[in-house]
Length: 484
Ligand code: URP
Ligand code: ZN
Ligand code: ZN
Ligand code: ZN
Image 1 (cartoon, rainbow, N blue to C red):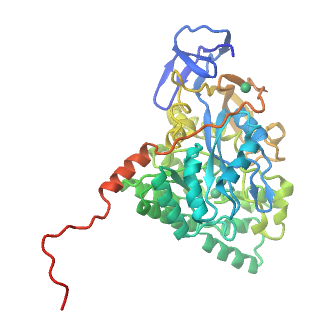
Image 2 (spheres, rainbow, N blue to C red; image 1 turned 180 degrees about the vertical axis):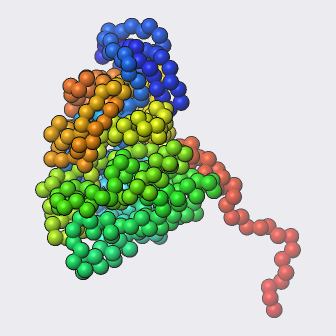
Image 3 (cartoon, rainbow, N blue to C red; image 1 turned 90 degrees about the horizontal axis):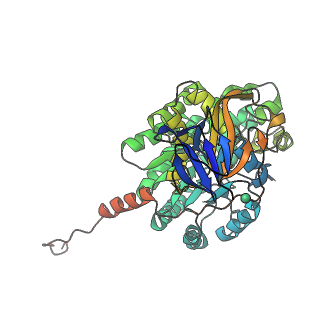
């Protein structure tokens, strides 16, 4: 691969802003400094040169609720690159009873079509000696994160005893548990009650998942993780109740991470009141969109550092798929898209409003994920030797989001009509220009699996502390004769 120089831009990382050219060769960054030359020049005048986005939470071609999510690794990663995201972390999802190794193989097969790099989380959807035994093999294969669903009763949900056992196993093997935190038992009862009352439209999806079910489960997951001696990562944190549990735990020294989604930050629950059934159903996801109070809480979390990353949970279903739930909201496939829009929407509503600095933007869209998931500085950094996953960000480029021009395979966009200012001029995946001023030049199969080792820094520190403070039998000098 010929060398490239990104010239005339301002480098923006999670901690620095400075003028420099960036040279890439063989897929990595080889030089950073003034007046660089190379075989090809990319003009970054007036632009910010940032680490490409990392979306830590996506579901490509995911088997769920009787169907498959409609973006696969090809269309999904194409959408990602179009919006400045150069890596996705997707979930291998064994069906209950299925081997984790077999699920891994299935995801390997699907991901051969990826246009950008990717990694996997493994879901623990059931519990047994086999799962316990396979977990270390999975970490050896470069997957150091295990997802647990506290919701979706009767399908993916795990019980507290299973979660505690799995968390302890994660502690032993240096892995990080992830949790979808909603009280699945309460949700199931609320769903039944709402349907019995004739409340069967998409708005009832939101009524069945109030913030309290999320707050309760988030707190429970954090406490169980603390007892198991392992850090924990809460996916799609959407409410003040969940954020409050995370914030409180962090103030007490507990190692917990929170992940708001761009959808929850910028769209609210009024969407479910829309008169058009399709409009509301297209926005059905778990947890549901919330009101302004919750949105303000999530923004504050990003500003103060109590929430660390912004993801999409990209899980796209077509209108036709959403219509499986006409007459019964519990059958509407849960999930929304967002991969192409995450960075422009966060820039527009975060940086352009002054809620986030540019450096904070890089931290929450890229660097923090790379650190938490243990792939920094290969990903999430602009450093010599790091992968040349870069976005040349033009703060003056604008567009109105429209499904008709998007890369995603579905027929609508939940951000339809939103005007964004701040878009990629170029997106580079390991040195290859995939987005060239609006032109899509992605290469199917270019993406590679990124191995992530276990025993990241937080795991190591926490297990050292837990070992030091573990219960120990007191060796006594005098023991009275047993009671007579
Ligand atoms: O509604 C959602 N979030 N769908 C995707 C699966 C999940 O729970 O993350
Ligand atoms: Zn989830
Ligand atoms: Zn998800
Ligand atoms: Zn290639």
